[in-house]
Image (tube, rainbow, N blue to C red):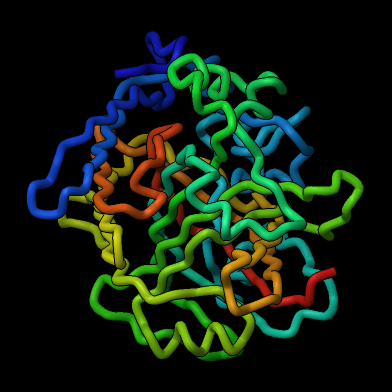
Length: 350
């Protein structure tokens, strides 16, 4: 069991992270069980901010893993780096919500509205996904963030000194009222959800210009509609089939799950406390497909109006299988996020 320093008498959620493994006799796979609980002082929450480059705008998604002078989290009351999905139907709801303009030349239009999602930040072993890393990119590591003064990265290295070269990523379970690419929507099964795993990256050549938007690598993007997965590929979006689910209970608890080859995940979150964020939160991201993907286009997205809530203490997330995600380590407690507007499109590589 390991906990962040400074977790004494607080107003913000602070995770203590418990990771246990049990041997499943039927599958011979180790089953990591990640339990997060506790409270965090504002000082400790601030230590979860990240360094590296200044963010674009004030959207939390752009901040958690990237901060030199301004962090992705101005505190944990902002929002986690989330690549959520929104639509034009929300763009007129809040006149003060300003979604950054995308560059000209988009080949497609991706719109999502009414998103609800669970988000969990994870450190991962880059060696397990090295074949997915394009040669022009490199993973941002925990050691980089620690050397830049990021408190949570220093804490992580204190608990896991042999994992200094591990990358930083986030896992999301997302469902949305509207999700369209060039006007076509998936056929969602009951409780169907997108599940994505994205990593923070930077150009291999420091002088390279990747264009506007914080760069991310789409390690996995699962969607529970095989026909739509094929449609996305034809439109230049990396995706694969996966039975993702996300649903609320009558008591207000959200439960997410995923079942794909070599991996099953289950997690939950009961949102508590104040809702933070709002119309003033905005940003942009550039999403690169993995090197193993058949698609070559990159995706640029712009978003605004993000809202977030902390999860009630002691959520449990379970990972089973031989997939690289099964060996990942939780960095922070999960959050529940919703309400932002997003517009995106595919672009040729610069």
